[in-house]
Image (cartoon, rainbow, N blue to C red):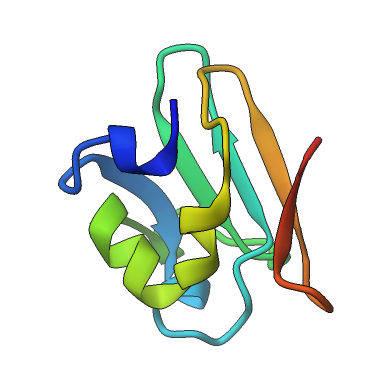
Amino acid sequence: MRFTDYPADKPVVTTTFVTEKYSPLISIVIDNEGDIEALSNDEAEMEEAVIITLAQLATIDPSVKTIAEMNSGSSFIKNLDTSTWVKS
């Protein structure tokens, strides 16, 4: 699935480090059930976990829209120098 194939209101688990832009988004994981996690490099505690929508994630980091195949079981790492996403 492409980014645009998902509904804009799809829930995404992330952290306040990402939503408050304390740290850059560097990792996206789509688990086998299709749930999405978007994380920074910080070691977050449960208190920092938040749920946002995919549309909100795209506002925080528009480069996520460039990920070509966001299929279940996929994970991606962002190259911070080029803002490109690489399947990991």
